[in-house]
Length: 347
Image (cartoon, rainbow, N blue to C red; front, side, top):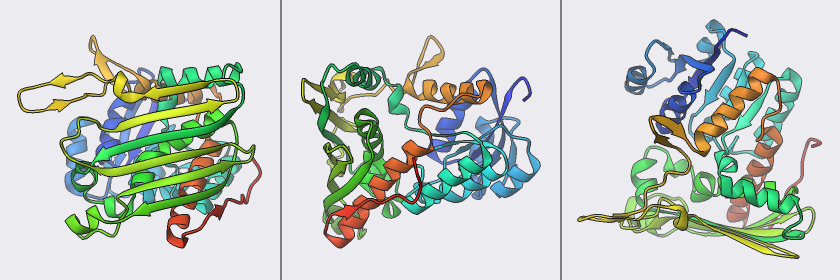
Protein backbone atom coordinates (compact mmCIF):
# COMPACT_ATOMS: atom_id res chain seq x y z
CA UNK A 1 0.00 0.00 0.00
CA UNK A 2 1.28 3.50 -0.85
CA UNK A 3 1.82 6.16 1.79
CA UNK A 4 -1.76 7.33 1.22
CA UNK A 5 -4.84 5.12 1.21
CA UNK A 6 -6.36 5.58 -2.25
CA UNK A 7 -10.14 6.00 -2.08
CA UNK A 8 -12.96 6.03 -4.61
CA UNK A 9 -16.56 7.09 -4.12
CA UNK A 10 -19.57 5.48 -5.80
CA UNK A 11 -22.65 7.72 -5.70
CA UNK A 12 -22.23 11.48 -5.29
CA UNK A 13 -25.57 12.49 -3.80
CA UNK A 14 -26.00 14.00 -0.33
CA UNK A 15 -24.16 11.24 1.54
CA UNK A 16 -21.54 10.69 -1.15
CA UNK A 17 -20.44 14.31 -1.07
CA UNK A 18 -20.74 14.65 2.70
CA UNK A 19 -19.09 11.33 3.58
CA UNK A 20 -16.48 11.82 0.89
CA UNK A 21 -15.44 15.14 2.41
CA UNK A 22 -15.03 13.47 5.80
CA UNK A 23 -12.97 10.72 4.15
CA UNK A 24 -10.87 13.33 2.37
CA UNK A 25 -10.02 14.94 5.70
CA UNK A 26 -8.46 11.73 7.05
CA UNK A 27 -4.73 12.44 7.00
CA UNK A 28 -3.79 8.98 5.72
CA UNK A 29 -6.36 8.95 2.89
CA UNK A 30 -6.92 10.66 -0.45
CA UNK A 31 -9.98 10.64 -2.72
CA UNK A 32 -8.64 9.87 -6.20
CA UNK A 33 -11.69 8.68 -8.18
CA UNK A 34 -15.44 9.30 -8.41
CA UNK A 35 -18.24 7.28 -10.01
CA UNK A 36 -21.61 8.92 -10.73
CA UNK A 37 -23.89 8.49 -13.78
CA UNK A 38 -25.62 11.90 -13.53
CA UNK A 39 -23.41 14.51 -15.19
CA UNK A 40 -24.64 17.55 -13.24
CA UNK A 41 -24.13 15.72 -9.95
CA UNK A 42 -20.62 14.74 -11.03
CA UNK A 43 -19.75 18.34 -11.89
CA UNK A 44 -20.83 19.45 -8.42
CA UNK A 45 -18.65 16.74 -6.88
CA UNK A 46 -15.60 17.66 -8.98
CA UNK A 47 -15.75 21.15 -7.47
CA UNK A 48 -15.35 19.51 -4.06
CA UNK A 49 -12.90 16.70 -4.84
CA UNK A 50 -10.34 18.53 -6.93
CA UNK A 51 -8.03 16.25 -8.89
CA UNK A 52 -10.24 13.17 -8.54
CA UNK A 53 -10.80 11.27 -11.80
CA UNK A 54 -14.48 11.07 -12.87
CA UNK A 55 -16.23 7.94 -14.16
CA UNK A 56 -19.84 7.54 -15.23
CA UNK A 57 -19.60 3.76 -14.60
CA UNK A 58 -18.19 2.43 -11.34
CA UNK A 59 -17.08 -0.77 -13.07
CA UNK A 60 -14.74 1.32 -15.23
CA UNK A 61 -13.41 3.02 -12.11
CA UNK A 62 -12.71 -0.33 -10.47
CA UNK A 63 -11.04 -1.58 -13.65
CA UNK A 64 -8.71 1.38 -14.20
CA UNK A 65 -7.97 2.66 -10.68
CA UNK A 66 -5.73 1.02 -8.08
CA UNK A 67 -7.92 1.61 -5.02
CA UNK A 68 -7.62 0.59 -1.38
CA UNK A 69 -11.09 1.71 -0.26
CA UNK A 70 -14.39 2.35 -2.03
CA UNK A 71 -17.09 4.32 -0.27
CA UNK A 72 -20.51 3.19 -1.57
CA UNK A 73 -23.06 5.98 -1.07
CA UNK A 74 -25.73 5.15 -3.64
CA UNK A 75 -29.41 5.16 -2.52
CA UNK A 76 -30.21 2.24 -0.20
CA UNK A 77 -31.74 -0.01 -2.87
CA UNK A 78 -28.62 0.20 -5.05
CA UNK A 79 -25.94 -0.85 -2.53
CA UNK A 80 -25.60 -4.55 -3.42
CA UNK A 81 -24.01 -4.48 -6.88
CA UNK A 82 -21.28 -1.85 -6.28
CA UNK A 83 -20.39 -3.43 -2.93
CA UNK A 84 -19.94 -6.89 -4.47
CA UNK A 85 -18.15 -5.52 -7.54
CA UNK A 86 -15.71 -3.59 -5.33
CA UNK A 87 -14.97 -6.57 -3.10
CA UNK A 88 -14.38 -8.82 -6.12
CA UNK A 89 -12.05 -6.16 -7.54
CA UNK A 90 -9.95 -6.55 -4.39
CA UNK A 91 -11.03 -3.31 -2.73
CA UNK A 92 -12.12 -2.77 0.88
CA UNK A 93 -15.62 -1.28 1.22
CA UNK A 94 -17.17 1.37 3.43
CA UNK A 95 -20.91 1.30 2.67
CA UNK A 96 -23.65 3.63 3.80
CA UNK A 97 -26.33 2.21 6.06
CA UNK A 98 -28.21 -0.05 5.61
CA UNK A 99 -25.82 -2.54 4.01
CA UNK A 100 -28.57 -3.68 1.61
CA UNK A 101 -32.37 -3.76 1.49
CA UNK A 102 -32.63 -7.54 1.18
CA UNK A 103 -31.50 -10.27 3.57
CA UNK A 104 -30.64 -12.50 0.58
CA UNK A 105 -28.38 -9.77 -0.84
CA UNK A 106 -26.82 -9.16 2.59
CA UNK A 107 -25.97 -12.85 2.94
CA UNK A 108 -24.41 -12.79 -0.52
CA UNK A 109 -22.22 -9.86 0.54
CA UNK A 110 -21.12 -11.78 3.65
CA UNK A 111 -20.10 -14.70 1.44
CA UNK A 112 -18.12 -12.43 -0.91
CA UNK A 113 -16.34 -10.78 2.04
CA UNK A 114 -15.32 -14.25 3.24
CA UNK A 115 -14.24 -15.34 -0.25
CA UNK A 116 -12.15 -12.24 -0.96
CA UNK A 117 -10.77 -11.60 2.51
CA UNK A 118 -11.41 -7.86 2.07
CA UNK A 119 -12.75 -5.65 4.84
CA UNK A 120 -16.24 -4.13 4.96
CA UNK A 121 -17.68 -1.55 7.33
CA UNK A 122 -21.28 -0.36 7.39
CA UNK A 123 -21.57 3.34 8.19
CA UNK A 124 -23.42 2.91 11.46
CA UNK A 125 -21.49 5.85 12.87
CA UNK A 126 -23.74 6.20 15.94
CA UNK A 127 -21.61 3.52 17.60
CA UNK A 128 -18.90 6.18 17.85
CA UNK A 129 -21.15 8.57 19.80
CA UNK A 130 -19.79 8.44 23.34
CA UNK A 131 -23.22 8.05 24.99
CA UNK A 132 -24.15 5.02 22.89
CA UNK A 133 -20.70 3.47 23.32
CA UNK A 134 -20.93 4.03 27.08
CA UNK A 135 -24.21 2.08 27.21
CA UNK A 136 -22.44 -0.82 25.49
CA UNK A 137 -19.73 -0.68 28.15
CA UNK A 138 -22.33 -0.55 30.94
CA UNK A 139 -24.06 -3.63 29.56
CA UNK A 140 -20.81 -5.54 29.06
CA UNK A 141 -19.80 -4.71 32.64
CA UNK A 142 -23.13 -6.03 33.97
CA UNK A 143 -24.34 -2.66 35.29
CA UNK A 144 -27.83 -3.24 33.85
CA UNK A 145 -27.91 -6.94 34.57
CA UNK A 146 -29.21 -8.70 31.46
CA UNK A 147 -30.71 -6.30 28.89
CA UNK A 148 -34.16 -7.69 28.08
CA UNK A 149 -36.41 -4.88 26.75
CA UNK A 150 -35.61 -2.04 24.38
CA UNK A 151 -37.39 0.93 22.86
CA UNK A 152 -36.21 3.33 20.18
CA UNK A 153 -37.88 6.31 18.50
CA UNK A 154 -36.53 8.29 15.58
CA UNK A 155 -39.04 10.63 13.91
CA UNK A 156 -38.49 13.40 11.36
CA UNK A 157 -40.44 16.34 9.91
CA UNK A 158 -42.20 15.80 6.60
CA UNK A 159 -39.61 17.91 4.80
CA UNK A 160 -37.23 14.93 4.99
CA UNK A 161 -39.14 12.68 2.54
CA UNK A 162 -40.68 15.51 0.49
CA UNK A 163 -37.60 17.72 0.08
CA UNK A 164 -34.37 16.12 1.28
CA UNK A 165 -35.12 12.70 -0.21
CA UNK A 166 -37.73 13.69 -2.78
CA UNK A 167 -36.03 11.85 -5.67
CA UNK A 168 -36.14 8.44 -3.98
CA UNK A 169 -38.25 8.58 -0.78
CA UNK A 170 -41.01 6.64 -2.54
CA UNK A 171 -38.58 3.72 -2.87
CA UNK A 172 -37.61 3.92 0.79
CA UNK A 173 -39.50 4.15 4.10
CA UNK A 174 -39.05 5.76 7.51
CA UNK A 175 -37.80 2.42 8.84
CA UNK A 176 -35.16 2.02 6.11
CA UNK A 177 -34.02 5.61 6.38
CA UNK A 178 -34.18 6.20 10.15
CA UNK A 179 -34.63 3.00 12.18
CA UNK A 180 -31.50 1.36 10.81
CA UNK A 181 -29.19 3.22 13.24
CA UNK A 182 -31.42 2.32 16.21
CA UNK A 183 -31.70 -1.29 15.08
CA UNK A 184 -27.93 -1.60 14.81
CA UNK A 185 -27.38 -0.08 18.25
CA UNK A 186 -29.99 -2.24 19.99
CA UNK A 187 -28.74 -5.42 18.32
CA UNK A 188 -25.17 -4.50 19.31
CA UNK A 189 -26.21 -3.83 22.91
CA UNK A 190 -28.22 -7.06 23.14
CA UNK A 191 -25.40 -9.05 21.50
CA UNK A 192 -28.03 -11.31 19.98
CA UNK A 193 -29.50 -12.35 16.63
CA UNK A 194 -33.01 -11.24 15.59
CA UNK A 195 -35.41 -14.14 15.02
CA UNK A 196 -38.92 -12.63 14.63
CA UNK A 197 -40.45 -9.32 13.55
CA UNK A 198 -44.02 -8.01 13.70
CA UNK A 199 -44.67 -4.55 12.24
CA UNK A 200 -47.60 -2.16 11.85
CA UNK A 201 -47.63 0.91 9.64
CA UNK A 202 -49.93 3.52 8.14
CA UNK A 203 -50.15 5.25 4.75
CA UNK A 204 -52.21 8.43 4.85
CA UNK A 205 -50.46 11.81 5.00
CA UNK A 206 -47.92 11.31 2.18
CA UNK A 207 -50.56 9.61 0.06
CA UNK A 208 -52.90 12.61 0.44
CA UNK A 209 -50.14 15.21 0.03
CA UNK A 210 -47.98 13.69 -2.72
CA UNK A 211 -49.90 10.69 -4.01
CA UNK A 212 -47.08 8.48 -2.74
CA UNK A 213 -47.84 4.89 -1.79
CA UNK A 214 -45.35 4.86 1.06
CA UNK A 215 -45.44 4.63 4.83
CA UNK A 216 -46.01 7.66 7.07
CA UNK A 217 -44.89 5.78 10.14
CA UNK A 218 -43.99 2.29 11.32
CA UNK A 219 -43.74 0.54 14.68
CA UNK A 220 -42.01 -2.84 14.85
CA UNK A 221 -41.59 -5.42 17.59
CA UNK A 222 -38.37 -7.41 17.18
CA UNK A 223 -37.62 -10.58 19.17
CA UNK A 224 -34.06 -11.86 19.59
CA UNK A 225 -32.68 -15.36 20.06
CA UNK A 226 -32.00 -14.84 23.77
CA UNK A 227 -35.62 -13.86 24.43
CA UNK A 228 -35.10 -10.08 24.50
CA UNK A 229 -37.39 -7.85 22.49
CA UNK A 230 -37.36 -4.24 21.31
CA UNK A 231 -39.83 -1.82 19.77
CA UNK A 232 -38.68 0.50 17.00
CA UNK A 233 -40.70 3.55 15.95
CA UNK A 234 -40.02 5.66 12.86
CA UNK A 235 -42.23 8.33 11.30
CA UNK A 236 -41.45 11.18 8.92
CA UNK A 237 -44.62 13.27 8.97
CA UNK A 238 -43.90 15.64 11.87
CA UNK A 239 -44.86 19.22 10.89
CA UNK A 240 -42.12 21.20 9.15
CA UNK A 241 -42.12 23.46 12.22
CA UNK A 242 -40.55 20.67 14.28
CA UNK A 243 -37.09 21.78 15.46
CA UNK A 244 -35.88 18.18 15.74
CA UNK A 245 -34.04 16.49 12.91
CA UNK A 246 -34.68 13.89 14.17
CA UNK A 247 -36.66 13.58 17.39
CA UNK A 248 -34.78 10.65 18.92
CA UNK A 249 -35.01 8.63 22.14
CA UNK A 250 -33.72 5.22 23.23
CA UNK A 251 -34.21 3.05 26.31
CA UNK A 252 -32.81 -0.27 27.52
CA UNK A 253 -34.41 -2.07 30.46
CA UNK A 254 -32.24 -4.68 32.14
CA UNK A 255 -32.81 -7.11 34.97
CA UNK A 256 -30.74 -4.89 37.28
CA UNK A 257 -31.05 -1.41 35.81
CA UNK A 258 -32.37 0.92 33.11
CA UNK A 259 -30.79 3.55 30.90
CA UNK A 260 -32.22 6.29 28.66
CA UNK A 261 -30.76 8.44 25.90
CA UNK A 262 -32.76 11.51 24.89
CA UNK A 263 -31.03 13.09 21.89
CA UNK A 264 -33.01 16.30 22.37
CA UNK A 265 -31.01 16.92 25.52
CA UNK A 266 -27.78 16.70 23.54
CA UNK A 267 -28.92 19.40 21.13
CA UNK A 268 -28.39 23.15 21.11
CA UNK A 269 -31.57 25.20 21.45
CA UNK A 270 -31.53 28.08 18.97
CA UNK A 271 -34.38 30.54 19.42
CA UNK A 272 -34.32 33.01 16.55
CA UNK A 273 -36.59 35.75 15.30
CA UNK A 274 -38.20 33.47 12.70
CA UNK A 275 -38.01 29.97 14.16
CA UNK A 276 -36.80 27.60 16.85
CA UNK A 277 -34.40 24.80 15.96
CA UNK A 278 -31.97 22.38 17.52
CA UNK A 279 -28.80 22.12 15.43
CA UNK A 280 -27.05 18.75 15.75
CA UNK A 281 -23.30 18.78 16.30
CA UNK A 282 -22.47 15.40 17.81
CA UNK A 283 -22.13 13.31 14.66
CA UNK A 284 -19.75 15.79 13.08
CA UNK A 285 -18.77 19.43 13.37
CA UNK A 286 -15.71 21.60 13.03
CA UNK A 287 -13.88 22.57 16.22
CA UNK A 288 -10.97 24.98 15.74
CA UNK A 289 -11.01 24.14 12.04
CA UNK A 290 -10.81 20.35 12.54
CA UNK A 291 -13.69 17.90 12.08
CA UNK A 292 -14.69 16.21 15.35
CA UNK A 293 -17.42 13.77 16.31
CA UNK A 294 -18.74 10.29 15.63
CA UNK A 295 -18.92 10.58 11.85
CA UNK A 296 -15.24 11.42 11.24
CA UNK A 297 -14.22 8.99 14.00
CA UNK A 298 -16.02 6.11 12.28
CA UNK A 299 -14.38 6.88 8.92
CA UNK A 300 -10.95 7.22 10.54
CA UNK A 301 -11.54 3.88 12.28
CA UNK A 302 -12.09 2.08 8.97
CA UNK A 303 -9.02 3.65 7.37
CA UNK A 304 -7.02 2.51 10.42
CA UNK A 305 -8.43 -1.03 10.06
CA UNK A 306 -7.29 -1.14 6.42
CA UNK A 307 -3.82 0.23 7.22
CA UNK A 308 -3.28 -1.98 10.28
CA UNK A 309 -5.13 -5.04 8.92
CA UNK A 310 -7.51 -5.16 11.88
CA UNK A 311 -11.22 -5.97 12.04
CA UNK A 312 -13.77 -3.22 11.36
CA UNK A 313 -16.07 -2.34 14.27
CA UNK A 314 -19.30 -2.63 12.24
CA UNK A 315 -18.65 -5.59 9.99
CA UNK A 316 -20.69 -7.54 7.46
CA UNK A 317 -22.44 -9.64 10.15
CA UNK A 318 -23.68 -6.49 11.88
CA UNK A 319 -24.88 -5.28 8.50
CA UNK A 320 -26.65 -8.58 7.87
CA UNK A 321 -28.49 -8.55 11.21
CA UNK A 322 -29.80 -5.02 10.64
CA UNK A 323 -30.85 -5.75 7.07
CA UNK A 324 -32.57 -8.98 8.18
CA UNK A 325 -34.69 -6.99 10.64
CA UNK A 326 -35.52 -4.24 8.14
CA UNK A 327 -36.35 -6.73 5.40
CA UNK A 328 -38.63 -8.62 7.80
CA UNK A 329 -40.32 -5.38 8.92
CA UNK A 330 -41.43 -4.65 5.38
CA UNK A 331 -42.50 -8.24 4.74
CA UNK A 332 -44.57 -8.10 7.94
CA UNK A 333 -46.17 -4.83 6.80
CA UNK A 334 -47.10 -6.40 3.46
CA UNK A 335 -48.43 -9.66 4.89
CA UNK A 336 -49.91 -8.35 8.14
CA UNK A 337 -48.35 -11.06 10.30
CA UNK A 338 -45.16 -11.85 12.24
CA UNK A 339 -42.15 -12.91 10.15
CA UNK A 340 -39.62 -15.49 11.28
CA UNK A 341 -36.01 -14.67 10.37
CA UNK A 342 -34.03 -17.67 9.17
CA UNK A 343 -30.40 -17.41 8.09
CA UNK A 344 -28.72 -19.03 5.10
CA UNK A 345 -25.21 -18.67 6.53
CA UNK A 346 -23.42 -19.35 9.82
CA UNK A 347 -22.30 -16.40 11.92
